[in-house]
Length: 366
Image 1 (cartoon, rainbow, N blue to C red):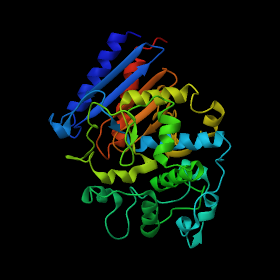
Image 2: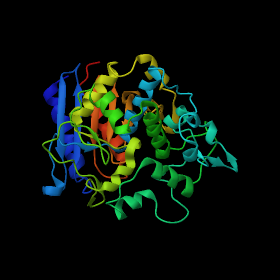
Image 3: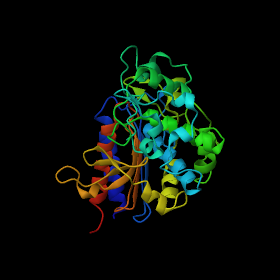
């Protein structure tokens, strides 16, 4: 690989992507490959460089649903320690009052049939508090904007989901993306470890991975303060990164960290320093998320599909609604990490990452 050529090609691609979209106010990209001696960290955007719209390489970045990978890894660690099994029922782990009426479909209560594996790969049939629309009143996305000072607790979110949204199918009988399910996983982690979710994250993932500036937005602070403000997160023109209402993300997507810290996490994971290969294989129990994209236990996997998803894109990790992505490409020995920091940009984030892979492939020797 010609490092200077590759770096320039990716930097140009990033610059073009940012400048071509007025809604990308703040974007970040890190591409790293040990085998190809490549390390590139970029930041840019169309926001005015003011106190609220600061753009700087090294800023902590809110990663949205990428955080589900962290939650799933914590569950995997507890399984490896013998404290949990992916087949455990959540009714044996959480209080009855919380689970009462949690999953009712076609008049049948399936709450006692939900297992951890169903929550992990979104096959529980539970609704998604974040995107599903209630019959009456504003949804949770709207509440982020209209109640910016409100701090949300996970049980509050789960109860709201029970009262306002409908289940989709019996556990194990379909796929429906559910942030509600990941809140339940966060509470399972708290119940088993006896500590708040953000403390478990810090003790078992952030500290072992040397992620000094990582934190759970709305719930914790980093071990070491960043010299830079958190990168802006936008709903259209509105920067919501300072809104307390982002606390609703919890175990479904509140991880916030500089891209260099996220690289450390992914390296620790791929190198077997967090989980054994045996447990990671078990977590590859995938449901179909979208054409060419499968979803295992917190792990999104891009798989070859003729005419749709060429084999050169085969990689795994997770992605978020803000155009965030955190993936490892085994064939290129490359880590691809970044965010476009704009809500409803999940597809655009993945599409941009695929273009970065194309840029890498051009310079990989056959």
